[in-house]
Image (cartoon, rainbow, N blue to C red; front, top):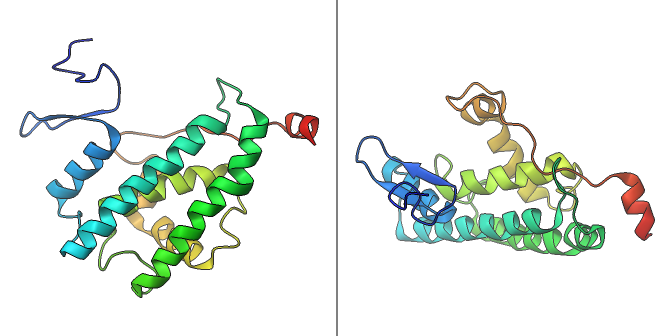
Length: 183
């Protein structure tokens, strides 16, 4: 691959047609989008929260990528169960505590969702698609998720009405017979 087009030889990349910038790596893309759109946080404190949420996106995505099957690839069911029962709830607990400490009426930052919140929503949405009850023990996080889910811009993306078209579910729940085999 041409390194000017794919600096690390992989996706994702963001090519800013206005400035010509090519931004590689998911978190760098989230930071760039936040800066360009004014959603990286209005204050230094919110910028820190935004950065924390971008990193938390990466942590949760790593759990999905390493332990959840896809339509194309099975994973170790034992690792899935550990992620489902321990790793993801532990991260949700941290997020629940962070939300409670913010006192922001059910959001991490004031005003519109930050870039970090948007990316965090995207990974939590993937988890909820696989594990619909995953937020049941986390009422603050569930409220935050439902608020973002109800936003017209989020609905437009989820309904396939964005410039990128319809997204299909990538991560899936393991087959019940695979789970039963380890019980």
